[in-house]
Image (cartoon, rainbow, N blue to C red; front, top):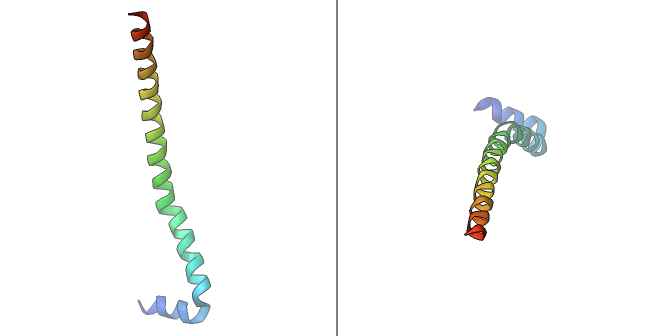
Length: 60
């Protein structure tokens, strides 16, 4: 904790904010990208199944 206070007092608020944004980009955003890609895959599967259902209903 003391190191964080020293960094804050020596380099100021802007350096701490930039460090936090780099950390946030490296961790949370990558996890979010993975989740969004997974959702995109699932939505594509649902769309293809809905298309098959529409074709079956038209043929009936």
